[in-house]
Amino acid sequence: MTAFRDSLQSNFIPNTNNIVLTEDLHYWCARTQRTYIVPAGFISDCASIPKVLWPIIGHPFDARWRKEAVLHDWFYRSTTPIVNRKTADQIFYDGLRANGLGYMKAQSMYFGVRIGGRTGWSSNP
Image 1 (cartoon, rainbow, N blue to C red):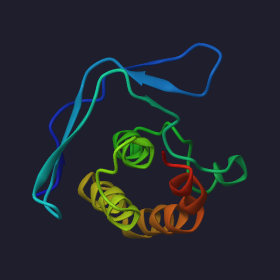
Image 2: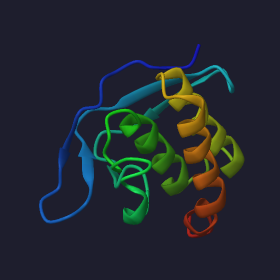
Image 3: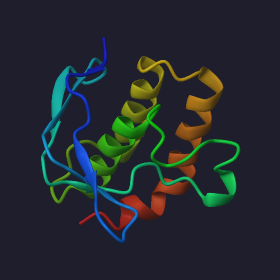
Image 4: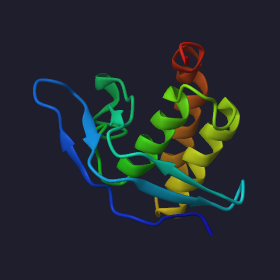
């Protein structure tokens, strides 16, 4: 089973489109048989959904994928690679499905990160 062990504890950062975690976020991943911990203090913009697609896909901070998006951002932005890009994207998809997001919406979001995530990954320190 793939699961978050915590609720997402965060605050919006004033005058930005970001949140900052106020507590660690723990995620058990069946795919890799590991627990990942997104540390308190991590800053995320949640899902990178182009504004034109918000009416179709949803808002970047939608509760249906907020935790998964934060975890995915952490994989992409960590200074030391935690997993490779493909695995990060697959874990994102696994989390969406485990959280009850429908197949079509989860697939759309997965393909979005596979296609649109290349630039974000290549800027990874």
